[in-house]
Image (tube, rainbow, N blue to C red; front, side, top):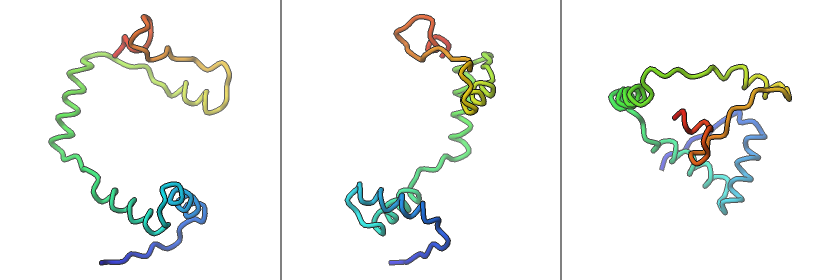
Length: 101
């Protein structure tokens, strides 16, 4: 088996990994191994699949345009209480954002 040494990890990262390992009933080493294995096995999207997904998205939404959410995000980030609120996304409630999808 091969080995890997990761240098200069922030102590807070190591502590979070240690807590995650404890929660999952594993050692820190086993938890790090599992994370690395999952990352290495994560499916990659090839160019053709990405193009198909983009084409499907264009077909689904057509010429519809969407509001820029930058102002909303900034307002919530800055803790402004008068931030505009989007309607809830509930397919069973008329007049909600679900109708836009």
